[in-house]
Image (cartoon, rainbow, N blue to C red):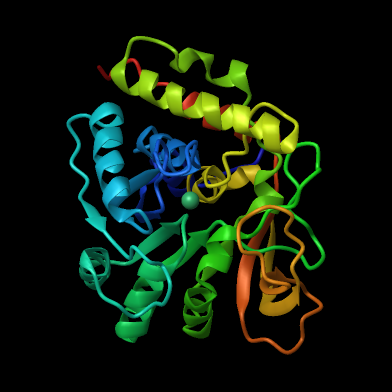
Length: 325
Ligand SMILES: [Ca+2]
């Protein structure tokens, strides 16, 4: 049955949506020589965001951990994948230990929030974002939402690939206090972590098109291949989960995810389930979301599943558009 729409409704439907104004906070370490190969997903996620200026308008980029390296690589990726566009990059917290210490990134983010409301994509430890909220609580209401890669359903273990090993909830575990600061300030939070991302997987054939003569593509390809081979050695499958692309997907393609809305969240200390990683304590905090939690005031939107088609969007987003050099 056809739906009858008023002329105004038809007009509204045909108006292109404005891109969301976002801040991009990242622990970018693709290509980092220290303990190489290193995580590639922030790099992939930045490339993906730059290919969707119709959906997200990046106001600023800030780095957390390895901040000097992240700064340099962000500049390179911007030159390669967004020529002619100027997006400022700021160095944030190098230690990502405790929120509260101001730096270039926190000052720039605070200034940006004074001017307008923003959504924040935070795909590393949350230290920079929490520092702004802790030191400038009046700016919390300027944050539309913080979309992060972290959190889990109670009892859910993070088992990539052939499920031989269990990995940690890195961004949360690196700086749990910053998550507490944001939840306590009632900042709207979107958790899109392992449970949601595990449905996406980039194998060799998915990235072959990057093996060409473009300086950026070639460099990126040369970082992705060893990361895929590491996946084979550690998890039994040659390839990788581009974790951080799913929180970005919430901002660019929200229809490709299933969500638990307004779900209670709390931090529970439990036996450490991780089988990988250095210095594993016997117990650790878990960031968990469950409608069974009755004692907590914290709430989040929890993305628990990626729908078919999103992986294809990630892959397509790594292709330079024909209009660009
Ligand atoms: Ca990251």
